[in-house]
Length: 263
Image 1 (cartoon, rainbow, N blue to C red):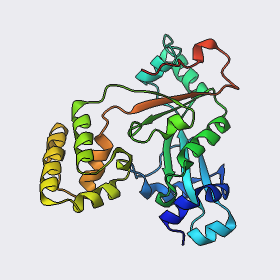
Image 2: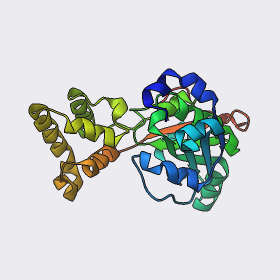
Image 3: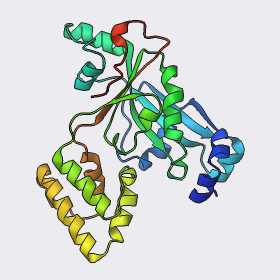
Image 4: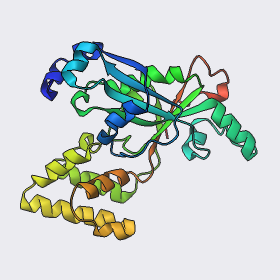
């Protein structure tokens, strides 16, 4: 079985043995537990998988090491209007819905098996599959976009709303006890780090988490543990970062070209 350090050392050769292909629900189910939003897959527009060749698959014990899920877009997205200069504004609801559904698909999940993280495979999945959707626009709303900007590395443009002060404070507090931003997409890893803290650091971060949870009603009484850590991670950015990509082969109108300045 390939270990994490071996994969890091052999990243380039490993990547050449992985191929982006049309996938299915089984590919998602096999990797869903690695995502911070683990849960049942709802309606989707397309699924693509990053699969290993036969030899590597035998060593890994699995076929898919990555998966990306596309869904239909939501009707209302404030930052979409910013990114498209209000192109979809000014129509009646039925016309607007038809226009959005015809022109946009949304990336709702990108999952990479932990042993393969750090090899640029998430960006590769996004970059290679966006043109396959056959629509002028691909978008995504990523909760942890500021932590792991692989969408931007894949060619998407990011737009951010102001992050709540409580989120900034907790991210900084995590950093002070050795939990860096890049780890904040992996609740089990965060929990393991928290479990290893000394008394002073543990008391400090517990106080900070307690302050953060005051904004979430009954959740403020959650006991320390993986379930609470998953919830905290899911709320660290109250408003997700918005990403958009314009297909250069399909976008003809100047109105649909993204501004070079992200807000």
